Length: 214
Image (tube, rainbow, N blue to C red; front, side, top):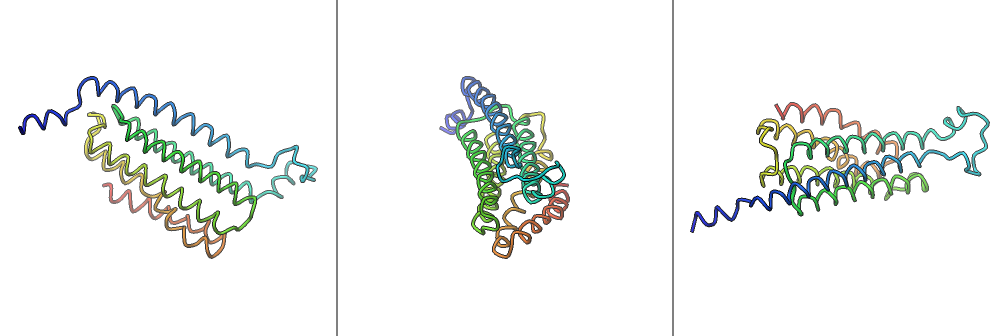
């Protein structure tokens, strides 16, 4: 009976093959969605055909829209950071599963909702709920990535080329961004400036996580 149970836990060759196909599809989907997110980030910039623009030089456009530029830059940096992290995770896997892929798609939905609330924040400057939702969906996206990595390790989806030390290092590398987003959540009630500055906690968090990973 014990032997029979252990055999059931081992994936068949057919299951492994399906898992590899799911992983390939997930990689393609992730890269396409991230490309769209980056494209959407640049749409935040003021458009030349905008009737409200009454500037005569490019410098005036940038000076008059410095807040939009900062929001776009911060959003772009965070999206690219998550893209790098997800590609590192997927690059260390040999296969995926429907559940693992589903969590990955949920992570992408959270990032898309984050960008939605970035645009919402720009339409209604200083709206507390918009800032709070940005923190919530950034944190959810990051912690879903952490969970997916733990799931992949537990279900032997990772490559044999990566050792346990490297797997744990990856785990700690995924923590600073969502932790910073969660830390920033209450600062949204104070002011947009306080909320933005609170994200600087990411630097000491990164330092601490690097120490822990060693």
